[in-house]
Length: 443
Image (tube, rainbow, N blue to C red):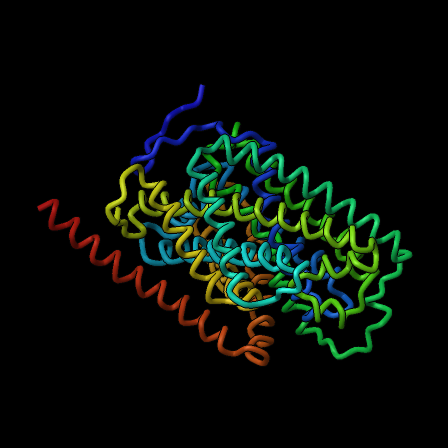
């Protein structure tokens, strides 16, 4: 029988998400963002080695997942990353700011996948810009809101169905496209150089974004059945499924398109690769598949972000205002999530959305590992060497990504730096004010 737990005015049902549902959510976020939104951008940085970038992304992600798994096994919790940070740093500005960075990176992922949905759906009409792209992106975010407001079981069931459809469809696309391309990697064979080691390392930052959906599982830990056992299993199963799917698709795309062609069609690379491999029917099949995958990604991400915001509110890490809305806090945080993601989807293109997400996520991730290493590793039985490796990998990738972006798009580095600084300053001011008000109330 599910246990009820009051969480900021909301009733959460423990055990309401099955192992299969949790895997569906995790892969839903990862595959929606990783394949359809990022393949072309990764190829632009990594050149003929873009398939290998996914492998390195999976390796770095596996090291990163270690902290989250060890912490979730010890203390499974909805909004689990906020819990990890508070246990590592205490109820201060560092924990609150890092948790807010995580939340914002997830909102960024929503807008990234929503714009990808719009890009693929409009591709058959040769529409690559204009107002229809943000309009469709906001529409799919609103659809995810309506499904999420209906409850956990609706999200879990729809996540399973969509995950099965898209993983099966993507696998079919990959196998047929590889067969059609004669198992020759055209992207590699046509490359003439010009791609640096720094560019390849920088591409891993985007590959990591393709796997970061595993944090969706961490943030729903208390609601997964048998969480002490299944949170870790769900994370590793999701990463394993995704690396296989990513490699299959990367080789399929590379066997039908040159690097120049992939980069030219970077926002809809899979659909472009389907045309020579499968003809017009394959092109439309890929468009439909992209629509299903991206809707699934937005659906799962909205679910996770609203949980995260509810936890941050309950833990007094962020302020909360009802703005005249009725109902529990989670209903309000769903609205906040949709508004933020829609705003990003309207004002930023795919490349800048992905870059902003990489800066926010990697910064937060290093803070998580450092906090666990410094204060919690003995308590949860974590290996210090693994934690230090996770920090080093993140830092190395972030440095390379920053160098590349300073050369190609310095304004996004400025946006990221300003955003991260603003989050830390805001949390410092808010928490100082809140603790002062609490002290006054006690006296």
